[in-house]
Length: 243
Image (cartoon, rainbow, N blue to C red; front, side, top):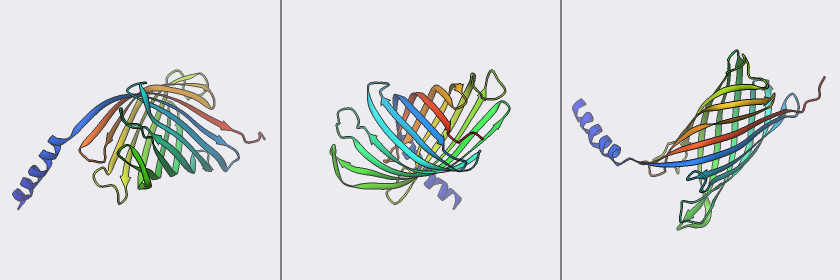
């Protein structure tokens, strides 16, 4: 019986492995990410993204993502919001696909000597407009997506990340799909980033580096490996009245 199952495994696994195809791409991702604290408990979130493909040749994605944040304490916060996404087509096509997305997130941070960490778990409800033959159709495809991010920052010229600090940045984020319309790509993508950052002020830093986005397409046996120059500005404001 064990030999029978082993034979089935070989017959079904190795042909599928042989059929997998990975396309190589390049891109530039620009982002502005803002968290503004309005009171001890409440704040707002806003991030903006502009992404180009074939390095800078043409548009890939544009995202506007606002949210409302509840601060449980200085290191734990909950955010819920909405995102509007425009996904641009492959070369030779013309129709831009809009997406309406709801999202909820729990984010927590820690700060030790020579290490600062940030993690989040995010749930998204995605409504992607239907499209066929380079034309938008009525209705939307729906699916859930779960995301987990681990972000590590190591100061290089100080013990802690504070104004005028150069730091090393590493993060990895995995995306998992769920829903009735997800058939072959339960795994959506993984984003691995490594780069350098500079903390200009207490609430403002710039991070520049290399990111690999490895994505499984809906067919299940086609993948994209996207090599990206990523440039992000992180801007945290605290508008609470000083006591």
